[in-house]
Each structure stands twice: as C-alpha cells, then as structure tokens.
Image (cartoon, rainbow, N blue to C red; front, side, top):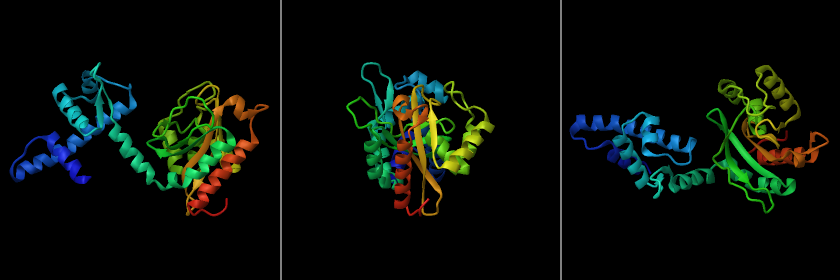
Length: 279
C-alpha cells in the first residue's frame, strides 16, 4: 500500500534527478497528497458530480494541474468521470477501502449482532456513530426491517449538537463537547437547541438518565434515541441509537420507554463486549 502511494505521488509530481531532485520530489509529493485530498474532500462534501472548472476554482489550482490530479485519481479508481457530462465523482475504490477499514474497526465488529437485534426488536433503523471532525461519523447502519426503500448511510456525517448520537458523545466525552461548541449551534429546524447554556443543561440530563433524545431537532418529523458505548476503561468510544418517524417513536408526546430500553440494552451489550463492566 505504501509503495502504491509513493508511486502515485511520483507520477503526480513529475520527474526529478539527483539528490536535490529527490528533495524537490519529496516536497512535491507532500503537496500532491494535499491537493489530492482536497479534491476528494470536495467531491465528498459538495454536489454529487463536479466539472473540471468547478473543482479547479474551488481548490485554487490551474485547470491543467487539476486535470492531472483527476486523471491520476481516476486511474487509481478513486475518482470516476461521467461519460455524458464529463463531470467527476468519487470512485468505487474509495468505498472498497472504506469498507476494509470498517471491517477491522473493533467497535463496528462488536456492534454487528447487537445492532441487528436492536433494529429487529425496535422496528427502526439502527446506527453506530463515532466522533469525527466536529461531527458524528456513521460507521454502521442497519436498515429498518420492512420493505421500504432505504439508503445506506455508512460514512455520513451528523451534527453533534442536534442529534441523539451527537448529544450522547458530547455528554460523555469532553473532546466531543468542545468540538460541538467550536462547531457552533446552527438552527437546523425550529426545534434545534441553539443556546449553549441550554445545550449544557441538556447534557446534564443525558448523563443523569443515560440516554439522549432528538425529536425534530435535526429532521422535521423524525425522532432518535441514543446511548453511549464505553470501552474497558469506561471511556466513551461511540454511541448507538435508532431513528424513525415521530409517530412511531413517540407515545402521548413522549419517546416510547420500550425503545429507550432497547437502545440502552444494546449499548450495554456492545460495551460489555468491549470490556466495560456493568453500568
């Protein structure tokens, strides 16, 4: 894998000769990796497909340089070009590498069976999330057990301040709390908590009861419940939760106790598999 990265950098950076040439090559390879990362982040975070001009202007490079990066990324399978529009999008190789990472991710591996059971018993979609770049990265997703059309959300990012998964992480992990504050409290819906003081009060409640709820704070008409996953040091390493329509998740204006219990039982089971004691 490392040889492949170096070889890719050499092709992207161009020829170099002698000791000074190798030094110049090293500087260019680092720059090439930074530029390639910028292209991949842009394609991952913006429109599904982007043209050469859009990509070049967004990352501040000349079209010729950007085209060279895209051509190399395309050769490696990290980027694909639509034949009809000529626009670029992320390639299948990234998905393969991402799934390879997730397959060896201990948290996901330990959660597989328990989240399957959670989705089945609750009748809702189950998720496992971890702290990543001022948000919640979904590392595992089990579909709601019905015949409805659903989209796999592994790799998606969710806000820390408005989702049940995010609030659980912020309540139990000081780093997550700081990142939530630094990210700000954007009003996503009319129900989103945007006051830092109210947010901290909410986190106190979450720690006291052991779970977090989100009713319409991130998506209108959608509710979530989440609980923390602890490791052998009893440190928070992630959160598990379920998400569904408010009318299914609530009863008499409150989140259903049986769903809360199911999520907490799942979190305890995964935590025990990670070496945590009873909590």
